[in-house]
Each structure stands twice: as C-alpha cells, then as structure tokens.
Length: 180
View (cartoon, rainbow, N blue to C red):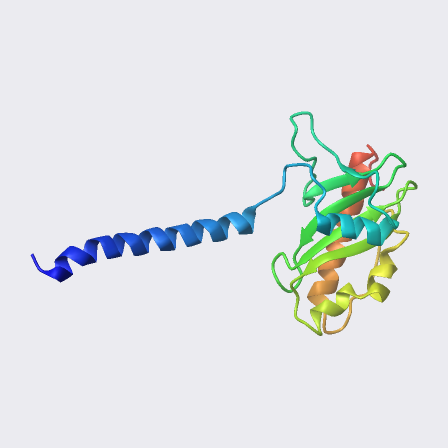
C-alpha cells in the first residue's frame, strides 16, 4: 500500500467534515431566530432611539414560553404604558436587507422607526434609512397609507413601506382591532 493510498481517505473525510461544519454554521446563523425573550443591545439601542429609553420594556411571550410573533414580525416588545414595538426583517433591494424596529405609542400610531441594520446598496438603498424619510411614517395608524419612494432607492423605500404596513397590521391584530 502506497503512502498516497494511506493519506487520501482520511484527508477526504477531513475535508468533508470541515465543509459540512462550515455549511451548518452558515445556515444556522442565517436562519436563527431569538426565542429567549432577552432584549439584545441592538434592540435596546433601537428602543432608546424611538422612546428615549429602553427601561421597562420586555418581550411579549406566548403561553408556551416562546417569543410572541405575527406574520412577518420577529418579536413584539412593549412596556406598561402602552408603547409597543415590532422587530421586522424586510426585503429591500437585498433579501432581508432591512432589519427594523417600528414603535407605536399608546394611541396606536407609529412614533418612530429605528434601523437596526441595513444591507442595502451604500449611497443608494441606504438613503431610505435617512431620518427625513423614516419621519414620514410618524403618525400612521392604518395599513392603507400612501408614501412616496426615493428615486434610486425604490426597492429599499418599498421595503420600509412594507415593513410599516406589516407592523400596523400586527399592532391592530395585537389590540384586537380589524383594519378599516
């Protein structure tokens, strides 16, 4: 038996194991959804951006101990005074390129949007994350709103609009209200 015949099988098996492990880690990170109910530093920063503080906020949980979600909503965060935020990952130009926290005040209107992360084209799609554009959604309480898109950032603008509509629909569902 030659040296090549002795080395090749373990080498091939090692490569298969390394490649399989790398793919498993990649898919895990791509599909991971936090179900621990812990508000991360990123979410805390988003709550502070929207409400001025993250104190008193907690994840809403289901009876089985999992994080409360709605269609298109990753998590629901609220405080005792009626403020509710929805964590949403939406598609812009990039699939899943918009990770947003959309906050509602006690009256049921959007009071702010925090961009937790954005994977859109720098200089173009990222313009949809500008405070001037995000501010246009303040006060919205119905999913039937109209908003302009940003030229050059059409997909990103539409992604944010879609996320706001998802959040408004989830808020109405959470409060047991039917959309008009």
